[in-house]
Length: 319
Image 1 (cartoon, rainbow, N blue to C red):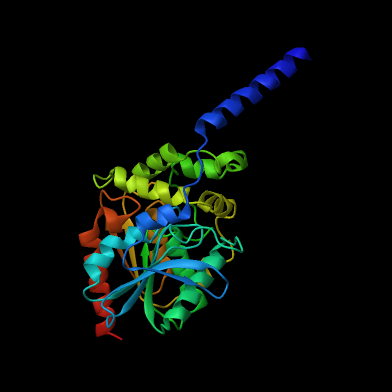
Image 2: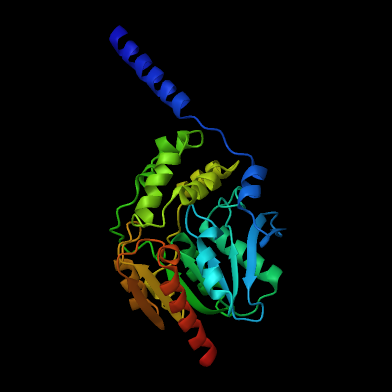
Protein backbone atom coordinates (compact mmCIF):
# COMPACT_ATOMS: atom_id res chain seq x y z
CA UNK A 1 0.00 0.00 0.00
CA UNK A 2 2.83 2.38 0.88
CA UNK A 3 4.49 1.61 -2.46
CA UNK A 4 1.26 2.36 -4.35
CA UNK A 5 0.83 5.65 -2.50
CA UNK A 6 4.43 6.57 -3.25
CA UNK A 7 4.00 5.75 -6.94
CA UNK A 8 0.77 7.77 -7.12
CA UNK A 9 2.46 10.72 -5.41
CA UNK A 10 5.44 10.43 -7.75
CA UNK A 11 3.19 10.47 -10.83
CA UNK A 12 1.37 13.51 -9.44
CA UNK A 13 4.67 15.31 -8.88
CA UNK A 14 5.91 14.49 -12.40
CA UNK A 15 2.66 15.74 -13.96
CA UNK A 16 2.77 18.91 -11.84
CA UNK A 17 6.37 19.61 -12.87
CA UNK A 18 5.52 19.05 -16.56
CA UNK A 19 2.56 21.43 -16.31
CA UNK A 20 4.70 24.07 -14.63
CA UNK A 21 7.43 23.76 -17.27
CA UNK A 22 4.98 23.84 -20.17
CA UNK A 23 2.67 26.51 -18.78
CA UNK A 24 2.13 29.59 -20.91
CA UNK A 25 -0.35 32.39 -20.27
CA UNK A 26 -2.61 34.01 -22.85
CA UNK A 27 -1.53 37.03 -24.87
CA UNK A 28 -3.70 40.13 -24.28
CA UNK A 29 -6.35 40.73 -26.92
CA UNK A 30 -5.15 44.25 -27.77
CA UNK A 31 -1.59 43.03 -28.38
CA UNK A 32 -2.67 40.37 -30.89
CA UNK A 33 -5.23 42.64 -32.52
CA UNK A 34 -2.67 45.41 -33.00
CA UNK A 35 -0.25 43.00 -34.68
CA UNK A 36 -2.70 41.26 -37.03
CA UNK A 37 -5.32 43.86 -37.85
CA UNK A 38 -4.86 45.99 -40.96
CA UNK A 39 -6.42 49.12 -42.49
CA UNK A 40 -8.92 46.72 -44.09
CA UNK A 41 -9.95 45.20 -40.75
CA UNK A 42 -13.52 45.87 -39.67
CA UNK A 43 -15.18 44.92 -36.38
CA UNK A 44 -18.91 44.72 -35.83
CA UNK A 45 -21.06 43.40 -33.03
CA UNK A 46 -23.80 41.18 -34.43
CA UNK A 47 -27.32 40.74 -33.13
CA UNK A 48 -26.19 37.83 -30.94
CA UNK A 49 -23.56 40.10 -29.30
CA UNK A 50 -20.71 38.37 -31.09
CA UNK A 51 -17.94 40.80 -32.08
CA UNK A 52 -16.70 39.72 -35.50
CA UNK A 53 -13.51 40.64 -37.32
CA UNK A 54 -14.02 40.74 -41.07
CA UNK A 55 -12.62 42.35 -44.19
CA UNK A 56 -14.56 43.57 -47.22
CA UNK A 57 -11.99 44.10 -49.96
CA UNK A 58 -11.47 44.15 -53.68
CA UNK A 59 -13.70 45.51 -56.43
CA UNK A 60 -16.90 46.72 -54.74
CA UNK A 61 -18.72 46.47 -58.08
CA UNK A 62 -17.55 42.93 -58.68
CA UNK A 63 -19.30 39.66 -57.91
CA UNK A 64 -19.08 39.06 -54.14
CA UNK A 65 -17.23 36.01 -52.81
CA UNK A 66 -17.39 35.11 -49.10
CA UNK A 67 -14.44 32.97 -47.97
CA UNK A 68 -14.33 31.03 -44.69
CA UNK A 69 -11.15 29.71 -43.07
CA UNK A 70 -10.49 26.32 -41.47
CA UNK A 71 -10.03 25.06 -37.91
CA UNK A 72 -7.32 26.91 -36.01
CA UNK A 73 -6.82 29.35 -38.89
CA UNK A 74 -8.02 32.89 -39.62
CA UNK A 75 -9.06 35.11 -42.50
CA UNK A 76 -5.36 35.80 -43.12
CA UNK A 77 -5.11 32.49 -44.94
CA UNK A 78 -7.12 34.05 -47.80
CA UNK A 79 -4.79 37.04 -48.23
CA UNK A 80 -3.17 35.68 -51.44
CA UNK A 81 -6.58 35.25 -53.08
CA UNK A 82 -7.68 38.70 -51.96
CA UNK A 83 -4.61 40.19 -53.64
CA UNK A 84 -4.98 38.12 -56.81
CA UNK A 85 -8.77 38.28 -57.25
CA UNK A 86 -9.57 41.68 -55.76
CA UNK A 87 -9.12 43.50 -59.05
CA UNK A 88 -12.22 41.79 -60.42
CA UNK A 89 -14.24 40.52 -57.45
CA UNK A 90 -15.47 41.77 -54.10
CA UNK A 91 -13.82 39.44 -51.57
CA UNK A 92 -15.26 39.17 -48.06
CA UNK A 93 -13.44 37.22 -45.37
CA UNK A 94 -14.17 36.78 -41.68
CA UNK A 95 -12.82 35.22 -38.52
CA UNK A 96 -15.26 32.68 -37.12
CA UNK A 97 -15.95 32.53 -33.37
CA UNK A 98 -13.03 30.94 -31.45
CA UNK A 99 -10.65 32.01 -34.24
CA UNK A 100 -8.53 34.91 -35.39
CA UNK A 101 -9.38 38.36 -34.06
CA UNK A 102 -12.95 37.29 -33.29
CA UNK A 103 -11.91 34.77 -30.65
CA UNK A 104 -14.14 33.79 -27.77
CA UNK A 105 -17.77 34.93 -27.86
CA UNK A 106 -20.30 35.61 -25.07
CA UNK A 107 -22.57 32.61 -25.64
CA UNK A 108 -19.59 30.24 -26.05
CA UNK A 109 -21.38 28.50 -28.90
CA UNK A 110 -18.75 27.21 -31.32
CA UNK A 111 -20.90 24.70 -33.15
CA UNK A 112 -21.13 24.50 -36.93
CA UNK A 113 -24.70 25.75 -36.66
CA UNK A 114 -23.45 28.82 -34.81
CA UNK A 115 -20.81 29.40 -37.50
CA UNK A 116 -23.44 29.27 -40.25
CA UNK A 117 -25.57 31.73 -38.28
CA UNK A 118 -22.56 34.04 -37.87
CA UNK A 119 -22.13 34.11 -41.65
CA UNK A 120 -25.85 34.77 -42.08
CA UNK A 121 -25.74 37.73 -39.69
CA UNK A 122 -22.73 39.18 -41.53
CA UNK A 123 -24.53 38.74 -44.86
CA UNK A 124 -27.51 40.56 -43.36
CA UNK A 125 -25.27 43.36 -42.10
CA UNK A 126 -23.66 43.78 -45.53
CA UNK A 127 -27.06 43.60 -47.26
CA UNK A 128 -25.85 40.96 -49.70
CA UNK A 129 -28.43 39.19 -51.82
CA UNK A 130 -26.51 36.90 -54.18
CA UNK A 131 -22.92 35.78 -53.80
CA UNK A 132 -20.51 32.89 -54.12
CA UNK A 133 -19.39 31.28 -50.88
CA UNK A 134 -16.32 29.20 -50.31
CA UNK A 135 -14.31 27.67 -47.54
CA UNK A 136 -11.26 25.66 -46.63
CA UNK A 137 -11.46 22.56 -44.41
CA UNK A 138 -13.92 23.31 -41.58
CA UNK A 139 -14.82 26.51 -43.43
CA UNK A 140 -15.80 24.44 -46.45
CA UNK A 141 -18.37 22.63 -44.33
CA UNK A 142 -19.71 25.96 -43.12
CA UNK A 143 -19.96 27.07 -46.76
CA UNK A 144 -21.87 24.04 -48.06
CA UNK A 145 -24.13 24.00 -45.01
CA UNK A 146 -24.90 27.67 -45.62
CA UNK A 147 -25.77 26.84 -49.23
CA UNK A 148 -28.15 24.11 -48.07
CA UNK A 149 -29.74 26.34 -45.43
CA UNK A 150 -29.98 29.51 -47.55
CA UNK A 151 -30.03 28.27 -51.15
CA UNK A 152 -31.51 31.48 -52.59
CA UNK A 153 -28.53 33.51 -51.39
CA UNK A 154 -25.80 31.37 -52.90
CA UNK A 155 -24.88 31.55 -56.58
CA UNK A 156 -21.95 29.15 -56.35
CA UNK A 157 -19.75 27.10 -54.03
CA UNK A 158 -15.95 27.00 -53.86
CA UNK A 159 -14.80 24.07 -51.70
CA UNK A 160 -11.08 23.96 -50.90
CA UNK A 161 -10.03 20.72 -49.19
CA UNK A 162 -13.40 20.89 -47.48
CA UNK A 163 -14.63 18.91 -44.52
CA UNK A 164 -17.30 16.53 -45.76
CA UNK A 165 -20.10 14.39 -44.42
CA UNK A 166 -19.62 12.37 -41.26
CA UNK A 167 -20.75 9.28 -43.18
CA UNK A 168 -17.68 9.58 -45.43
CA UNK A 169 -14.62 7.78 -44.09
CA UNK A 170 -11.59 10.07 -44.07
CA UNK A 171 -8.39 7.99 -44.17
CA UNK A 172 -6.22 11.07 -43.64
CA UNK A 173 -3.69 10.84 -40.79
CA UNK A 174 -4.27 13.81 -38.52
CA UNK A 175 -1.38 15.92 -37.13
CA UNK A 176 -0.52 15.18 -33.49
CA UNK A 177 -2.26 18.36 -32.25
CA UNK A 178 -5.55 17.27 -33.85
CA UNK A 179 -5.22 13.76 -32.43
CA UNK A 180 -4.56 15.09 -28.93
CA UNK A 181 -7.56 17.43 -29.07
CA UNK A 182 -9.81 14.39 -29.45
CA UNK A 183 -8.62 13.16 -26.04
CA UNK A 184 -10.51 14.43 -23.00
CA UNK A 185 -7.46 14.20 -20.74
CA UNK A 186 -5.50 16.51 -23.05
CA UNK A 187 -8.34 19.00 -23.41
CA UNK A 188 -8.49 19.24 -19.60
CA UNK A 189 -4.95 20.70 -19.48
CA UNK A 190 -4.53 22.18 -22.95
CA UNK A 191 -5.80 25.64 -21.96
CA UNK A 192 -2.63 26.26 -19.91
CA UNK A 193 -0.02 24.49 -22.04
CA UNK A 194 2.27 26.21 -24.54
CA UNK A 195 1.13 24.83 -27.91
CA UNK A 196 3.97 26.23 -30.03
CA UNK A 197 5.60 22.95 -31.02
CA UNK A 198 2.28 21.21 -31.64
CA UNK A 199 1.22 24.14 -33.85
CA UNK A 200 4.52 24.08 -35.71
CA UNK A 201 4.15 20.35 -36.41
CA UNK A 202 0.53 20.83 -37.52
CA UNK A 203 1.48 23.66 -39.90
CA UNK A 204 4.27 21.62 -41.50
CA UNK A 205 1.88 18.70 -41.92
CA UNK A 206 -1.04 20.77 -43.25
CA UNK A 207 1.13 22.71 -45.71
CA UNK A 208 2.89 19.54 -46.92
CA UNK A 209 6.24 20.99 -45.75
CA UNK A 210 5.84 23.73 -48.34
CA UNK A 211 8.73 26.21 -48.76
CA UNK A 212 6.30 29.00 -47.88
CA UNK A 213 6.44 27.88 -44.22
CA UNK A 214 8.49 30.28 -42.13
CA UNK A 215 8.56 31.65 -38.58
CA UNK A 216 6.09 34.39 -39.48
CA UNK A 217 3.49 31.87 -40.69
CA UNK A 218 3.86 29.61 -37.65
CA UNK A 219 3.73 32.58 -35.29
CA UNK A 220 0.52 33.80 -36.95
CA UNK A 221 -1.20 30.56 -36.02
CA UNK A 222 0.42 30.55 -32.58
CA UNK A 223 -0.50 34.13 -31.68
CA UNK A 224 -4.11 33.64 -32.79
CA UNK A 225 -4.45 30.56 -30.59
CA UNK A 226 -2.77 32.34 -27.66
CA UNK A 227 -5.04 35.39 -27.91
CA UNK A 228 -6.80 35.72 -24.56
CA UNK A 229 -9.74 33.30 -24.45
CA UNK A 230 -9.07 31.63 -27.80
CA UNK A 231 -7.37 28.50 -26.49
CA UNK A 232 -10.36 27.72 -24.29
CA UNK A 233 -12.74 28.45 -27.18
CA UNK A 234 -10.85 26.18 -29.60
CA UNK A 235 -10.82 23.40 -27.01
CA UNK A 236 -14.58 23.82 -26.63
CA UNK A 237 -14.96 23.61 -30.41
CA UNK A 238 -12.84 20.45 -30.58
CA UNK A 239 -15.10 18.82 -27.97
CA UNK A 240 -18.00 19.13 -30.45
CA UNK A 241 -16.25 19.16 -33.85
CA UNK A 242 -19.19 18.59 -36.14
CA UNK A 243 -22.74 17.49 -36.77
CA UNK A 244 -24.09 14.27 -38.18
CA UNK A 245 -27.41 15.58 -39.49
CA UNK A 246 -26.70 15.79 -43.24
CA UNK A 247 -26.52 12.83 -45.62
CA UNK A 248 -25.40 12.41 -49.21
CA UNK A 249 -29.04 12.66 -50.28
CA UNK A 250 -29.30 16.06 -48.55
CA UNK A 251 -26.13 17.33 -50.19
CA UNK A 252 -27.45 16.30 -53.59
CA UNK A 253 -30.09 19.01 -53.14
CA UNK A 254 -27.38 21.66 -53.56
CA UNK A 255 -27.72 22.56 -57.23
CA UNK A 256 -25.43 25.59 -57.34
CA UNK A 257 -22.33 25.36 -59.55
CA UNK A 258 -19.49 24.09 -57.36
CA UNK A 259 -15.74 24.33 -57.82
CA UNK A 260 -13.86 21.68 -55.82
CA UNK A 261 -10.14 22.37 -55.33
CA UNK A 262 -7.90 19.88 -53.53
CA UNK A 263 -4.27 19.27 -52.72
CA UNK A 264 -3.20 15.73 -53.65
CA UNK A 265 -0.97 15.49 -50.56
CA UNK A 266 -3.56 16.60 -48.01
CA UNK A 267 -2.64 14.95 -44.69
CA UNK A 268 -5.76 16.18 -42.87
CA UNK A 269 -8.68 15.51 -45.25
CA UNK A 270 -7.74 12.81 -47.72
CA UNK A 271 -8.01 13.59 -51.41
CA UNK A 272 -10.54 10.75 -51.76
CA UNK A 273 -13.10 13.06 -50.12
CA UNK A 274 -12.78 15.37 -53.14
CA UNK A 275 -14.16 12.62 -55.37
CA UNK A 276 -17.07 12.06 -52.99
CA UNK A 277 -18.03 15.74 -53.27
CA UNK A 278 -17.71 15.52 -57.05
CA UNK A 279 -19.98 12.46 -57.15
CA UNK A 280 -22.69 13.95 -54.94
CA UNK A 281 -22.87 17.57 -56.09
CA UNK A 282 -24.95 17.92 -59.25
CA UNK A 283 -23.01 20.67 -60.98
CA UNK A 284 -19.39 20.38 -59.90
CA UNK A 285 -15.92 20.81 -61.33
CA UNK A 286 -13.00 19.06 -59.62
CA UNK A 287 -9.37 20.21 -59.80
CA UNK A 288 -6.61 18.37 -57.93
CA UNK A 289 -3.18 19.93 -57.42
CA UNK A 290 -0.19 17.61 -57.29
CA UNK A 291 2.40 18.09 -54.54
CA UNK A 292 0.04 20.41 -52.65
CA UNK A 293 -1.31 19.87 -49.16
CA UNK A 294 -4.31 21.14 -47.21
CA UNK A 295 -4.05 24.87 -47.99
CA UNK A 296 -3.85 25.42 -51.78
CA UNK A 297 -4.74 29.11 -51.58
CA UNK A 298 -1.44 29.73 -49.77
CA UNK A 299 0.66 26.87 -51.13
CA UNK A 300 -0.30 27.45 -54.79
CA UNK A 301 -1.93 30.89 -54.82
CA UNK A 302 -1.49 31.91 -58.48
CA UNK A 303 -2.88 28.73 -60.02
CA UNK A 304 -5.68 28.22 -57.51
CA UNK A 305 -6.78 31.87 -57.75
CA UNK A 306 -6.78 31.70 -61.54
CA UNK A 307 -8.99 28.60 -61.40
CA UNK A 308 -11.42 30.52 -59.20
CA UNK A 309 -11.32 33.48 -61.58
CA UNK A 310 -12.24 31.31 -64.56
CA UNK A 311 -15.00 29.63 -62.58
CA UNK A 312 -16.47 32.97 -61.47
CA UNK A 313 -16.27 34.45 -64.95
CA UNK A 314 -18.21 31.48 -66.28
CA UNK A 315 -20.93 32.23 -63.73
CA UNK A 316 -21.21 35.77 -65.05
CA UNK A 317 -21.27 34.57 -68.65
CA UNK A 318 -24.01 32.02 -67.84
CA UNK A 319 -26.23 33.68 -65.20
